[in-house]
Image (cartoon, rainbow over all chains, first blue to last red; front, side, top):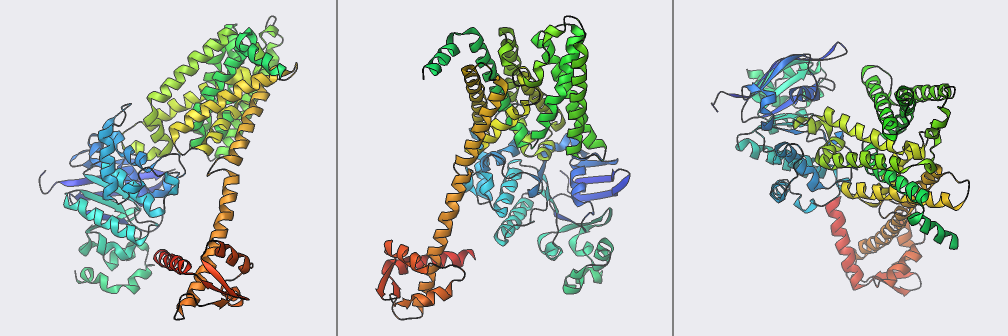
Length: 256
Length: 379
């Protein structure tokens, strides 16, 4: 792959529910090998954007390219971590079983996982630090452990581009650190990670790329140029208490 | 006792009895196994709507083909049950009508139409003998060998499809969107699984009836969920419970002259559910109740032990004694400190020094120290 190739390219993406636009004419170019945050207020369409990119929601218009090819042909390069709360954690299954689901795409229809796939699963569980919970029923997990299960499931997908919906939501501090370390490892391997994120305080620390979203795309680019007070005000409508409490973080942007 | 022996021998050798028992077992097996998905996908009520929606299909199939061959009626039931389900799903998707209203609406409209058709065919000569009204409450005694064979073929096919698409159906039930992101056609799988559940319901209509059939879908799976945390075991257990209820129901209804089989089967599975809800380990009510009491006791013991430890750390030797009054004031709300101390004494963790003065033993000191460390870590 050439250096200037975009991992993800979104063109004119529009999503509407009952004629009400939820996402309006989104254009995105995300270079390969970055960790990008998608931030914006509640109802800004962050989750919708990810789901529309992944084809889980039918967009009214738009085009999604992964490494220059249409998404449908590149699906095998894409990994997905949905919101932790989107599933029933009382489902009668084990940690190992859930993680194994990440391999179903490679397996294809009807074929069953083999010992080889179990080995991959355990490797991923080890990476997220819960290999000891492999046989545990998933209802016995804490929030942080649930999130690690979802991450392990994405790891076994061995994707090039990852989409994660609020992976830091409701996890303990240890898990949060572990996830950040994991994301950085993935980036070192040249993978691209796109994260819906809520906590503005940690954007500069965890991410090197950011997209500010509020139905429209407000801005997208490297954190140091894009994560500015002005852009944030435009995204959140001037009601960001964060701006007052942490003005020093805005510095690079303001100088620009 | 003798009566039971006769029933059991009938079960093996009497044609009618054997046919009915076999039919009930098949229906229990198939609806139990596939009902697992309805329960796990929180679609229990959909089963009820499907069963009721199947009724007009049965009657229409008879009117059109003038045949009461089990396969013809079953196909009618499947198509109409399926159509009802499709309507429900689309009403929810396309209008502002909520799920419960959509279910109620389709259930009553289809069922009402079915009843109307039933009344209408009473007037057709030679239709009266068709006995289609047995689909309302079920009439197991009327089962013929040809019915059983049809049930076995259709149900067997449904179960085979379930096993073939095991992995995909699990994905659909647990995390539909993730499955879609992997490239599986979740809508296609949904339609297939829904069809299988409709089939499971239709198989039982003749025996259990439209009105009670949804119990055979929901109840075995609900009972099975209590005993296991693994999906494949849940499916197997649910199938066994369903089949067992079918056979037990048949046997009980065989005991007396006017005991209807369908309702008895449903009662049998209800008792299995009741037992499971009460007695199953971990998820059962009794188990939880015991665990609660144990937890409470443990917390009480640990609190007093830690209080004594806190007091003792203020003195030079671990076994320094303290008054029960001090301990009483330290932990709020509960009484019976004395009882707790006596319980701790039995475990050799504290000792009684004099009057109301108690102290930690060496072992108690150790234990309290470990506990304090553990608590410090978690909090």
